[in-house]
Length: 114
Length: 111
Image 1 (cartoon, each protein chain N blue to C red):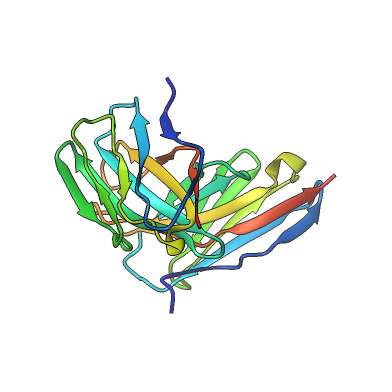
Image 2: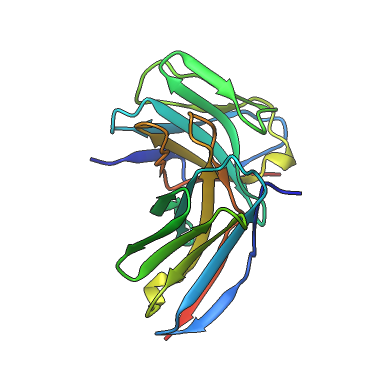
């Protein structure tokens, strides 16, 4: 049982390049999330999904896209990388049993845009 | 005003000390209160949660919620070097609303 896995661990992008951050969970959780974490700013929700085929925007969705074709996978796409997207990206999943939200986080992807 | 305020620290204490970590919030609809621990270069992991007001204890950790003051605390007794991490408070109003995280307090326990 690996939990939530993310790839890559670290990536350097040039301005204007694109990339996909991969996220996979093996806990059969319906809810999945993408956050970015900047120093002193806490976790900001980018996109979330309540199940396969259903996604919705969070607080800071501009410059990102997501898809959810399976329960397990929730990739995050950056189309035109900008320096403002330099951050640590965390994927999380949740069983969402009742109203209590217990989120399980992946190890993160560090992205540097130059 | 941020919905959730948390002192960023860093907080440095000697081993064995009692640590108090705190958050204040402005949204009176919040009912579920959580504490996450995040080691350096790792993802956050859930430490404890409480519902509404009151205390909850788990080993050396005690979570406390005062809804009248919109103030939550996490106490760590007999702190250990392995407790050195960033602690994030988080809360939501239930009903499938999103979770709001604090910015985190960095704790260092010195042997």
